Length: 334
Ligand code: NAD
Ligand code: LMR
Image (cartoon, rainbow, N blue to C red; front, side, top):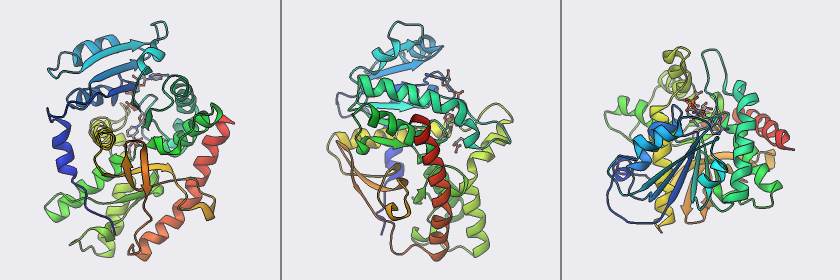
């Protein structure tokens, strides 16, 4: 059974001014649509003592702007023009958040971004493997179902792979599911979402929400809305990109969870990670409920026994899709 997590408290904690702790967080792709608001939210997080911003352009302006926010953390901006800018940005980082890469336009799938983003993530992961191999990597760049295997393969090749420290950020799916069910229940509750981060691989587990009753039609419609919530935003932005603000919120929340775990708190989260839950099916990566500690993933919890037959079927349908994406990512590096 899934324990309840305090998502609202998490949001509040992001703006807490307590808890001095030395934590350098690097954002790669910091001048982008996600990177800018995410950097702002990280600047507002008292657990972050050094914020290091890297992008191929515009970073000095973003760093100067965010740097005026009156929390005590130090902000430094690096761009591709600076000699060793990327390496300097990564030195001593405890968390590296990666929203670098191109977003979708209407009519595209996340996989359509592979040709551009695979190389970006590979190169950034390579730099992380060299400069801060013990940092936790939070990968936002799409397609997450492939970019996480890409980063993992890069770390393996460099001989510094630690599966506990590489995360695909799926928090936006949880935020969306919670928001959509919030409308139905009149209050905000946590809704587990497992699988991956693309279309039918996104699987909300409404059966695990206490007090929630859905007709089959409502369940189907809400499942579809969570699975294709990203498309809703892509269409509304009409060619100007995909979710940025809600993603920044979700990414900052996930970063805060890792920082809290690092300071000794027991933290439960959902993330797309290396997992042996579906080893028999030949699947290596799956997003599920995890316990975090200072080293990253401490324990991967199994899917709850009580998930519905409908949800089990969704998981079975997602497995071949997930396998395709992970093989594509891993082969790209090989
Ligand atoms: P954006 O185009 O606004 O910003 C991307 C930034 O990355 C730009 O500033 C660009 O200069 C930078 N960049 C490109 N190559 C780089 C490199 N080699 N090194 C450093 N920076 C580099 O895009 P966005 O809206 O911020 O989205 C970024 C990515 O996040 C996209 O791939 C998008 O699909 C993905 N995304 C994922 C989720 C999720 O839930 N995981 C949610 C929303 C968006
Ligand atoms: C999302 O879920 O909003 C992101 O993955 C961006 C996208 O392309 O939909």
